Length: 138
Image 1 (cartoon, rainbow, N blue to C red):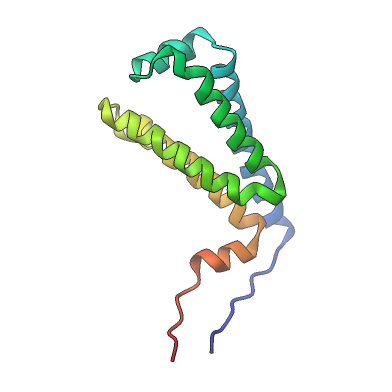
Image 2 (image 1 turned 180 degrees about the vertical axis):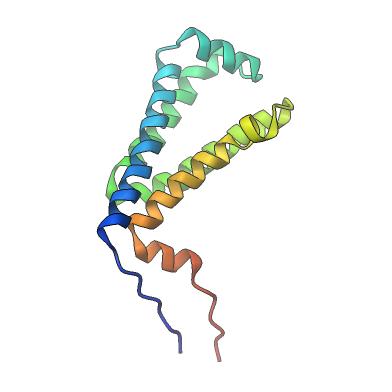
């Protein structure tokens, strides 16, 4: 038999979760906009990271797709999975060029952590699925 853990959705959990999700989505939309509009500092920074300037708009489109998926409640978990992979690429890119660890390399980890925390606070069933201990089958 397996025991299920019931986690209540409280108003503060919902508000905090929505706030963290909104913060993440706004950040991702700002980042995508800079890439799509080819803003000079974004172009320069992307090239300094070793990406060709021709990759900026496609990266912006990929990021916009992830932000849109994450923004829609029905696809928010799919968007978070997609964006976790995208942010992993950012971590790898910064690590490859020996960027400072805590401010640059791990920044994608910070964003992903905030994104997932927002989802877990909004959807208690997700918390149960992610963090409940594995049950032995007899």
